[in-house]
Image (cartoon, rainbow, N blue to C red; front, side, top):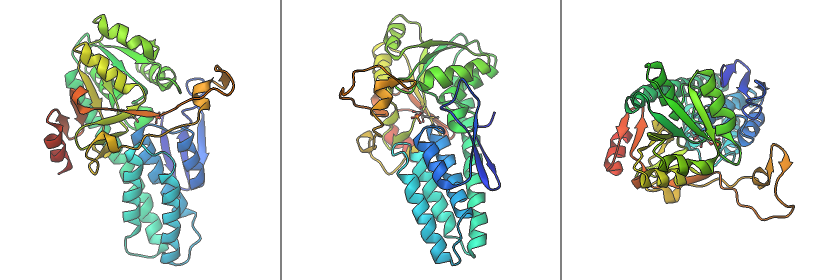
Length: 341
Ligand code: MRU
């Protein structure tokens, strides 16, 4: 199963909104279709969004009819603007745009730059795959035999196009022969935990129990959970972490119950330009995601809603951040600047 595949003149994406009922692949042949797939969460998860963005820009470049480099670079700028408006929180998207823009500044005519952009997108994809495999094996050291691990949202192969981050660590621990169990939060409103995490873990033969988000405190307080592992969409310099809405509540509950709370993410998810989580932009999504489940209305017509897709967990609740360059702990400010170097 491949989350994203580049095929010469098109991008193939496994439609994550159709899972677990259908394994359906979308064939995207222009960049606006890629922007739309990112907005609709057909491709989702911070690293996968970054990879899709890079390929989407390469696709837009291939389709350009511009004759002069100037015209072509103006078009690339326009394409990049469409991607930057797709989803605001996952910083991998902005890192991918920055790298693709830089690659487009390379010497040569339009046709040479087009090839450079494809090579750069493939490079970003390969780097993400390597980074997540590496951090998963590093993080697996924190998982002991017989551990029960709680996770939130989906931070598996689907979300990364590679090994996974939070789920990557769990999968790596399983492959090392450790006996482990997982509790997966369903993750309202879009149910990435119920639909995707359970599907991925069951395919890997890892024992998984699905719970609603509000059950997490109960299991943490009863001593049923040995550690919590989640992914991230953007990590600030001081370790504050934005991840799927509900992560902050889990982190507070974990601290209250003396359960280690780990964040797993590649360095590409760190935003070294932000001092703290206060500056992380939080995506507000369509109210229908809250008032409806599976297309069916569950709330009265006209009810007011709020739908922030992410929240920020202050670094004081985070026991460690697991990256491919090492596992960092407090004091995050100093440890993170070492990663930046
Ligand atoms: O809105 P989503 O489904 O893109 O949110 C995804 C998450 O919050 C993941 O935990 C995060 O991107 C890490 S993916 C390795």
